[in-house]
Length: 244
Image 1 (cartoon, helix red, strand yellow):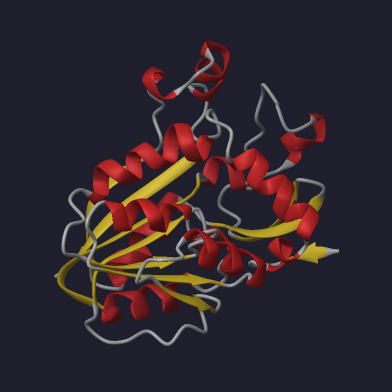
Image 2 (cartoon, helix red, strand yellow):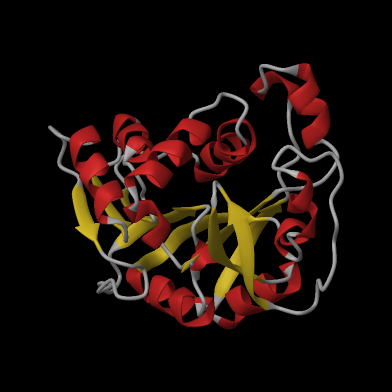
């Protein structure tokens, strides 16, 4: 069975295994992607922030602690949004159980739109980029991260197990859906080239201010071995864009 979008997270066992993996100090999310995201987001004080694919709300807690005046989290998984409600209890966070594609984007509302490791689940990002642009205030920031295209081009390397030491890059320019064996499931993710993201963002009128490929820093890793392994190939791609 193939899982699309947030549907894999609707299974308790998968969700538990995902959160356990995600919480490892040396996970790519914690050791590579989050430090880059935090640095590029900058000062969050007095900002109205939209978090697309907010997951269990843990990052939303950090955003609120950093002084955001308003936080809206959008998440397609009902189990994830339940966790987010618990984690953000006692705050003024607005949490909405909706896919990104079906979310009713208001116009000229947000100072920052962030989406962490979620847009590779979306088939039509061109339309989504347009909706995001219209929902942002003039001068607002849109920051998102995805799996690096070198890793989504082909999942043949995974036949040797999750903790692989060599990676196969194949069919790079054949964009579209890919079947990824992940945590005991088959999950659909959409492969796109870096060029595609650049072209789609500029077509949506975004001004790209930064592009980073997740160069790891030793200080963010507990284990030397994992740090050395993560230097071999980029696994994260981050864009920071401005409206106007």
